[in-house]
Image (cartoon, rainbow, N blue to C red; front, side, top):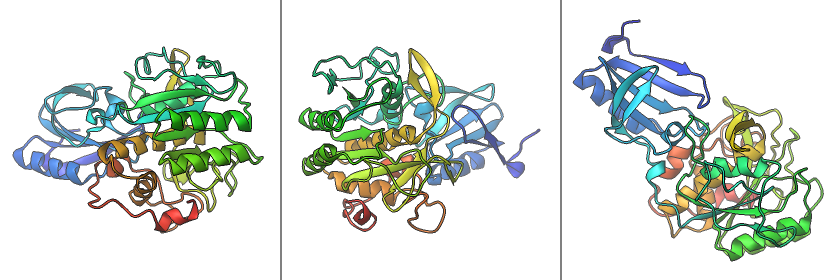
Length: 370
């Protein structure tokens, strides 16, 4: 189909990084100016590319790790050569900067089934880990779940959609769950306390229990007093009540959404704070990249986003970061906060590149969970 400035159009590409919008127009000065302006207002990571006789705006729709980091481990930069729909062009403008954010000082602890620290997506990116079950340094991951979660926080990957949200952060692997998904209250609590002692600023808990976890509740309260943000999956029973440890005060609770709807398995309710993509999510696992679905996959994307916000705003408290993530979320469902989406779906670009001015007060939407 011939393209001119008068018949610019939008097509939606479906693939590993689903939801990429491709807007084309004839490559004129006016078209370049207009597409740069569109990129600046897009609300998601974007790049303007000169492609033959066309100029193209690439924009990530919602999240789906929708930054250029997902498409290129090094991030898109002005002057870089990229391929779009089989054609090669040059990046003229980009609003994506996740890969360039210096965030190594922000440690994100993954309390899970362990982490394959030798996976290509994660090698050299992890601190020495700890096994909360036997006290050893063995964090090998027979289940693959923890590796998948760690990959969505900070993994690097050559294929679009396989990488993580925050490729610049440092990971702290803590093994507290066995290969069958079993864990004890004591092991999770010990893992959280170890993470705090090792300087983690964010702790991700992609795990669930219907039974209360009193030791874990105490560890979460201690983490909160230490200024650490605990992020937890809401659970996968499809009901309007979150599981433990997400149910405890002081936890940023994350559910799953896809294509603007609540995932059928995702728990919601009054304790839900926000949602992120959790269906058919690809990430590092078993020396390759595999697909999983669940709120376990949504939670680490919020944990990674929190780490990036901390890197950009090092003096913000955990409560302020959590408030900001909810304030910048894109509203879904009923206007305002609701039981299906909480404050809305994580908007990674708005959260990281927004201009909040003074640090947000930890109030309002936070009063339900904190």
